[in-house]
Image: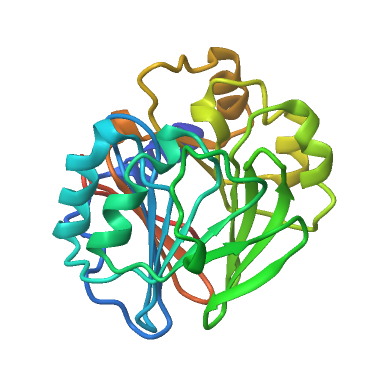
Length: 271
């Protein structure tokens, strides 16, 4: 009987933990907050970073098919200006709307790696080229380290604010994992490369990095690797496929983080 009641209490606690809340992500941030918004787009990927210090950074812009949805979501967040655009890949699904957002939001700094191939149009006077090992502080306490950069334009980033870190991958090739594991980064959040269509992250990589949550953007022509999904779930990593759960927001303070899912208003506490 005692074990039965313990089981009931455990199940009840889980229900409370997973139950939707009425909480929304913040429009106005305190000085010590940083907010990451992973946009649910029809095709391609884009992430908006806002800091309580008034800085804003956009990572990628989605494909041209996502232009309307990207601009709508930026408008909903009352964006007037974006300081920096980071391109982690030079393909149309990553920079399809670069020209439009550069003009509309008066972006003054465009960060890239490798040799420009013509797909991403970047004004020369606004360019800043990063390479493997570079460490930059784009807002107070918000650090970006280039974990791996390739001449073809792919760039994997380690983003850290306070006690929270994000590994932001552009590729899903197993050969890249040896470069990424050179750094002592234990990411809470793992942004999967190539829309989850490849073989990385491997079981070994997941065991060494031990993330809590994985983020997957949507690509119309891509097929998600079912084995990869199973591997993530077997490693007890929450899988957030944005085309299923909607735009997802991560709010970070120096010591913890919260995750807000737009479609069901679920708030998840990183602690």
